[in-house]
Length: 262
Ligand code: ZN
Ligand code: FE
Image (cartoon, rainbow, N blue to C red; front, side, top):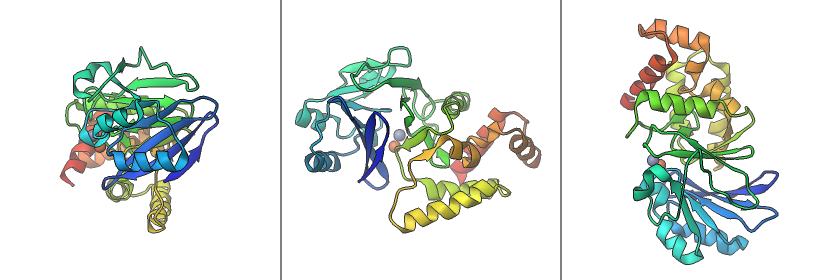
């Protein structure tokens, strides 16, 4: 487990399953303690016992089992309340509180903003608390989620919404996929010095058994192939090279399709 200091809270990062991360947000001056996307109960139970944490809430970014699998077991264990997107309520096990960007959850001690980010699934949401972003399977280190339910236009809008957050925002995504994503990124973004530097640094972290996550919005904008269409020169060169329409959406769609076949 790794712990990250923020002004009002601490983020505990727990590896789970093969390559998932579960996060526990522990408010400093309040009892609030939120589990984000509990894939399995074991690591959460152990961390809570070891560090004396008392979860008050669970928030699921979306309905997939590797994000909600331990909802019911943890609710039973800790008596915590489960928060999910109102539009996906019937697919969130044990949901108690339905929220959306217009009606974010109110929890003492934490200033929670919800972003509706459909694409990977229709009811997918991202959680922003101060300078921390919990984005589930929408944005990954150098990648983005597959489009299981939404359209390219929806996912592109969702990614733009995340890219608009302040540069220093810490990106806590739900999977450690970064190295594989970077290998793909290097195949389509050959002259990107920031990308080459990230590959060196993230390979080093993994060799030492450390996570590549969190990253930052700044780093993702510089190196994530699914945010690179925001840069005019990249977008123009990519469109010309691959003979496609010169719009960010068309370039995003082409890169996403290429990654699906990769
Ligand atoms: Zn998912
Ligand atoms: Fe997932």
